[in-house]
Image 1 (cartoon, helix red, strand yellow):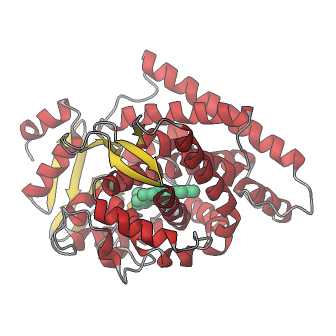
Image 2 (tube, rainbow, N blue to C red; image 1 turned 120 degrees about the vertical axis):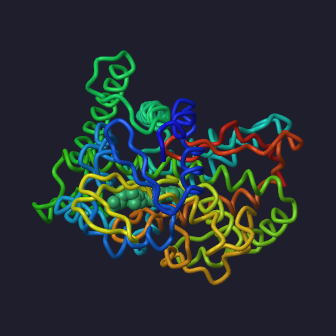
Length: 438
Ligand code: HEM
């Protein structure tokens, strides 16, 4: 792709437009910018090749490593033997069998959200993203640290929110100035990171001192600390901090944005909403991952939001050695961008792909999503470690909200809200709804 064609969206910071026009230009499109050879892959078979068959030829790479300023050497960006060890140590606390421990935190966060909405004047619109962001962060802080609404909670959520806002702001640029440059924005960002790290260090130290030997903790940090007492090779304090920060960064906003899109579509489709309410009125809320299948429409609405608005929409990989990909020559150091909207909105796997259709997931296997043409949680060995957690919390929240409220768009005649690329696919305007208690 010649740079002059890429320049307008790059200058407008409208990267979604750039990805879309590159996908239309061909299955593999190269753009050379700021010293990078960026290669966008929009062909489903080639994406599969990168994530599965040739996975060993790739690592997360330089573009992804920019996150390292916040997440340190956490799972999202590390590679090789370090990644293997961290993934092995993290897996047990997020495996299917461990999830029921977090269900009380999930239920509490949803109950608090419902109570908050009930206290409001129903004529006042709710901002879905702000509301769900508060809900998913509360759930995550409770699940991973065992922290509920207290002074520490307010402090942690304020710092994490401001850090994420800054990451979203920086995420709208493909290639950003390095954090080491002495700009005022970099200085503020570095100070926020230092503050967040200090808070996490403090939480780890306090939890470690108060943890009783016989305790069987529900929170993820407590479980890691117990394991470390048994196995000296477990995460050090510094590694734990990096992984906890990674969980907060990877697991909070992605879920909140996806749920906001899901409820936005539910609010504009009365027939879907009625069916969803009938489904959730008659069902138990799930407390294990297998139970989400009993709420097929709530599950479908969540998966459909992740199909139309994948979080993140682009998976990044760096080639570690020269090789061929579908007849194209890839060089060492090439930065691959796997374009999920091209797969998720393509006719190969999806009929009427632009339509939000929560009922299309009958028989869909959430443990083999890549085979079904859905990379909402990535694919291959680097797929999302928190996907079961996210699915359980997401389905539980959609079903509980459907039971408690009827949602309507606050401005039904306004144009649909489009997505905007900011690392994630955020709404370009606030998603406002009116919630009437049932
Ligand atoms: C709707 C919610 C979520 C979505 C859409 C999502 C999506 C993804 C995707 C697409 C990847 C793969 C990235 C890549 O291949 O480059 C990923 C990785 C990851 N996710 Fe999630 N995620 C969600 C929730 C969570 C939660 C709740 C957690 C933790 C509690 C989490 C932790 C992680 C971690 C640690 C990785 C890196 C795994 C590795 O490389 O081994 N995610 N996520």
